[in-house]
Length: 98
Image (cartoon, rainbow, N blue to C red; front, side, top):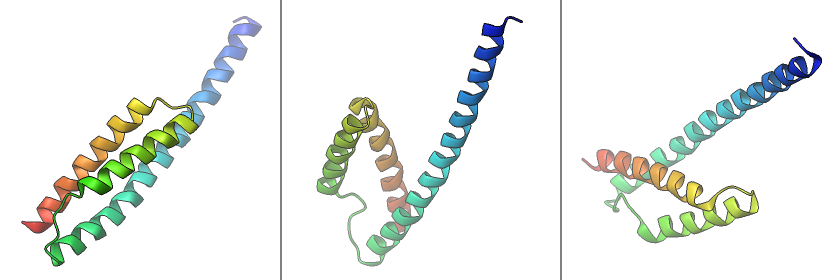
């Protein structure tokens, strides 16, 4: 193994370790987010509020796209990701109302 190949292998290992840590952060952050949306869903169910709030969802998407641009992340990807999360939250909220 050449010195360059060894250095590349070390860098690859470091990047992968960082990716693994960030994946864990994402999972735990999503879990925390869903704990709060679960509370919101139960509150909505208790007070006969609709499971979806399109105005709030639009604000959140706009906010996330802005944050994505600031973070140099593709805003389209951020929008798709948040739409996926919102759809899952709404599904949970509908289950609470059933």
